[in-house]
Image 1 (spheres, rainbow, N blue to C red):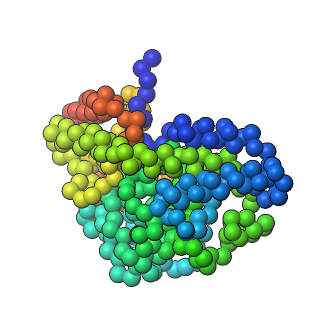
Image 2 (spheres, helix red, strand yellow):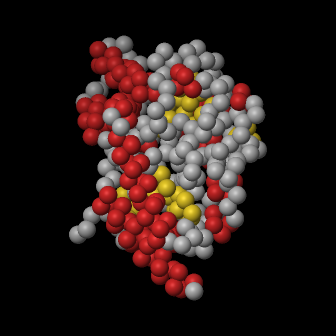
Image 3 (spheres, one colour):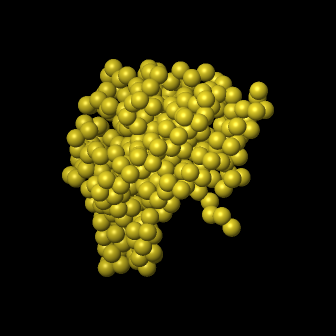
Length: 348
């Protein structure tokens, strides 16, 4: 049986071996991190080790980092009730708490007039477009850039940053909110006062341990230049498809993007149809953010960039990982162009 090709790494990444090993080891630690006995201290040690690992990978040494259930909870903790402004390219977890009135240009970049009253992602999950974050920005969703882009929270000049473990080889169900040391942030989940009084509830020790190990491994791979190799594969794929498919548009091409992301727009060929056809061919891609996939509608990100509904509903996202090979992309390109030709013949 032919193995499947996974090209949906922006939705979630496979669990890194380092994360798996750390989680298995954490399963044998029985204590509650809030307990003062030896077992509790052992569990607390795992949490604090992971905190240091994530902070080091983020370039956030000396900052405060609060473990939460994921970037969605981090967004709520950072943004709820603050009345900040954002653009329509933001993830739904951010859009739920901001007024979406910031202008987005045709390349997917956002103009921020008052950084202290705004939230802006570092990179878009659908197009991969990377933003120039202004100094003094209130909040940034760092999720897609963490582990793929070289940056340090301590020199971004951002008030708070959101990250998620499962986007860089960690487990699902754990994330973090990072902020300068001593930031005043009222808790939304009240109870035992865990996480420096900012997020009550017994810590997810196993998930947190996996997050720490994954972040450390991701920082190592980034420093080693592994994503440059992925970017070269992505660029070769785009060149091949643009040569073979008339009318194909790569959203955001020409500006800085994540090294692994291609948003392919084929007007008139529905994105969800493409996703299903690729799935039947043994290839996993998506029609946009995983949180909105399965909902038959035009991409609001592409609409914000000026694409009409026909084009915005005819896009797929191909997102590579460190395990992606040239053979994987050959298989995708052959399957996708074959289906495109069938679509074009029917439309003729």
